[in-house]
Length: 263
Image (cartoon, rainbow, N blue to C red; front, top):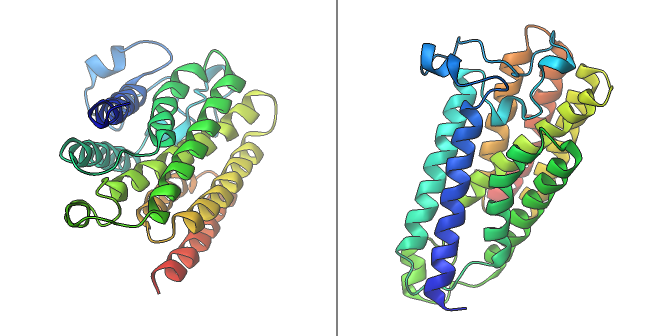
């Protein structure tokens, strides 16, 4: 496969992920009517948003990260979209940089796909989300292990000229959205909501720590994960101090790893 075609695939998958993330955030279980009647309002009522008082019939399996319900989460999504654009721009100008590992393109494609599958087929959607997280983590880890060989690569990014710093931020968001969806799928299968969310947060914290240890200097991954946990804690603090406390513990664990990576 030629280098130019590989770069086209890389830019296409990153763009598909960004479009899918935006449409997923705006999508509801009912219709687009709330958007038309109250555009860009954080207070609008959106069917399917996660709520500690809601039942399974009102539940979207995407969760608070993929479908923001607060200003903090909307800002995080905006940052993710900007990071995806920065990554695409870096790849678009990387004419002489080596191609990315195919795992990264596969991970972005799966990350664009799973939010549209998890509703009708929850287990398949979760499997796709897990595969997206694994592919992105393994692909980015390969980049951090590869030496920077040319002056053009050094000027472009510092790690292979790939726009990998914003890509790590995107990966952190993907891991957190997948873990959040895991908790809601468990709730949909009959486990208590608070317990389900706690299990999802536990998986998120463990996965984030493991991935960050593999990515070493790319702390933008942890920045996205910590940002997401702050958003979950802010939304749930008024209804479940247990969930908010679990978020604080997860943030603390990631902060320790980040300090270790940067000192």
